[in-house]
Image 1 (cartoon, rainbow, N blue to C red):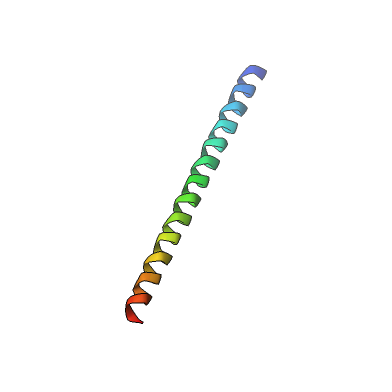
Image 2: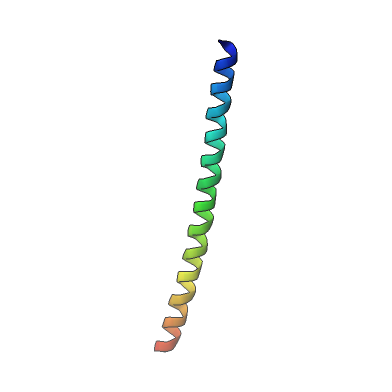
Length: 49
């Protein structure tokens, strides 16, 4: 029974680690997209000057 609990806990920890990795990737992707959009805005502002 204790072995099953350890296995279940290990599975939960693994899922949390995968979720953290996914969140970190989403955050990195969002930051890159924000930087790209800021660059587009700068180019658009330049064309109106």
